[in-house]
Structures are given as structure tokens and as C-alpha cells.
Length: 440
Picture (cartoon, one colour):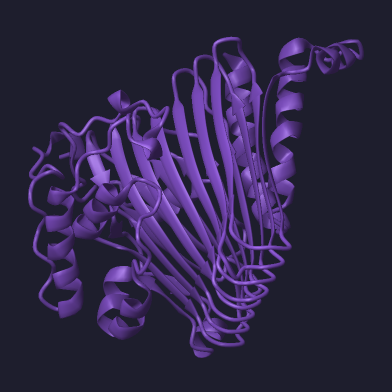
């Protein structure tokens, strides 16, 4: 029997299943408290400032169900069909929030105390460590109701912990696939880089079939003193899907955090990214690329929060829009009272590939300290006719010329990942998208 033939059992608006008996008491209480909060918090409205320009009519809550166990569990075939790294330090594979193969971690790093486990396992084996870092940040950008929903319905995710002074030379990879009509998943990513450590994480979220689905994901990133962490996430769900993704990162003294997000799939996307710089000398780099087409709508909200002196942040978002697609970007840089010598930049650039696409950008600054250097900017331009003419005059046909220009436009953000293998994966995924658009 295929997943589609199994009658849906539980809407995600019904009370969630009880947590397993062996899970920690604090976690069970967290789930029940979150469900009560979810019921108490109002649904977002377009009149809310945090949801300005958002098309909430596309966010449907009806006929969505907790994803059931899928028969699409051929791990090797699923990995082979996904663009991913040729070499990794470990991998975890999920289908519908269930582990489908034994998690792997290079023995060298395991001996050094690195923890890379499904969250359901880490809660039992490392409960106190997980508790210290699990969803400790409040939802700041408008999706508190969905954060509560995520906490209440969370089934699984991964926990990645790198001890003090340990450096992973190659990334770890996490794969999430969703399968089944009207399936809902709630993956959680919890990443902790100990003092003086360094690591890279690549996470991929993909649909197996072209069905309606819903992904409500949360990522917690903690960079301790003098740590270096790169986190990359790609989303290529069905174009009938909806996605709400909340990322919260916290950088301690001299920590360097870099995040990159690629959005290709979904009919409607809401991404919220908060970067807190809580220690002197902390650095944050926030990168994103999206390529919406047809009637896709991508909504991006960001916050760069400088809480201590001598911190720096740099945000670069690149959006290439086709057909009747739409993007919304609202970003804010906040410099707190004592955060002198802050250095912060925020840039959102939109390339309109059709006359009917729409890009809304709302950058902002809130500065409460002295001796700071902060700037923000947003641009929205059609593809350059001069550049098109230049390429066409050298024998490049217009569809190929447009593809080259768009590729070059988004590549600036990709080049800043700083990892050749990861950049190759991202460029491969972008190449597939552009080739598909060109072939239409």
C-alpha cells in the first residue's frame, strides 16, 4: 500500500501525540506548554507589521496531516537522486521525520567527542546538553504561533555538538525528504559549536513526489567563544508545498557564524532569520539565494542584533524572479546601547526576469550606540538590455544569454560560502533550475 492510500489519521490542528515515555520530563512539559501557547496565540494577519505584504491567502491550514511513515525508504537511491557532497564527515537521513538509515559519523570525530545524532536519540542520551540549547530564543519576527506549533508537534531532527577545540575538516550532511499528499513535517536542527571549534553543516529539504505538503522547521545555532561554523540549507520541496522556516543564531565572543539559504521549491515560503551577536568581536554573515518562478511567493524577514561592542554582521540576499513570482524582504539592523564600534551591512538585490514579477524590500536601521558603521540597501532592476545585447552580438541566443546573466547575478552570494565543495552543490542545484526555466 502506498502512502497516498493510507487514510490520514491526525490533522496538525488536532492535539499532538503524546511524547514517548523515555523522553525527559522537561521535554514532555515543553511540548504540552507549547500546544497551549499555540492555541492562545492569534493567527497572523496581513495588517500585522511583521506580515506586511505577506499573501496569507496562500497559507492553507486545512487538510494537512502529520506525515505518516513512508515506504520510500531506499536510502541509497534517495541520496543518489540528490545533489550532495562527494565526501562528508557523517550523514543522517530522514523521510517524513523518521530516520531511514543508521546515522553515520566518522570514527575519528566520534572519538573526539563530537555528537551527531537524531534529536530523538540525543534527548535520551544527552538530555541536559540538549536542554541548555533547545529553542532558548524567542520568536522575534512574527511567527511565534508557528514556533509553538513546531515545538508541540516536533517528531525528530538532528543534534550536532562539536566539543572545545575540535575541528571537522569536511561537512556533515542531513537529508530531509517528505512524501505523501497533505503531509506535514516539523524538522528541528540544533547545532552547538564549542569554544575554539570549527565545523560545517549542510542540510537539504526535498520532496519525493509532487504533492501538497507543509514544512514547519526551526534551526538553533550556538557558536561559543572563538568558534567557526558554516551552516547551509537548501529547500526544493514540491511547488505545491508551503514552508515556514525559523533560524536563530547566537555568536559569543570572537565567534564567526556563516549561514546560507537556497530556496527553489514551494508555492509559498516564509523564512525568518535572527542573528544575535552577544560577545565582543563576534561576526555573522547571512547569505541567501532564491529563484522563484510561475506564481511562487517567497517572504524573507531578518534581524541582525548587535548586543556587544566590536561586532560585525554582513547580510547579502539575492533574488532572481521569473513569471508572476513575488518576493518580500524585510530586514532590520539593531545596535544596542553598549554596542559601540559595530560594523553592519545589509543588502538585498532583486533581478526581475519578467514584467509581471514583483519584489518588495524594506531594509531598516535602529542605532542606539556611538561610533558605528552601518548601511543598508535594496535594489530592484530588470535584466540589463545592454548586457543582453552584448551577449547576443557575440552569438549567444537570448534564452542562454538570460540564463548566463542570472547565473552571474546570484553567484556573488554563492562565492561567499567559502567552501568549494558546497559551492559546487549549490551551483549544480541552480543550474538545474535555470536549465528547466530555459527549456520551457
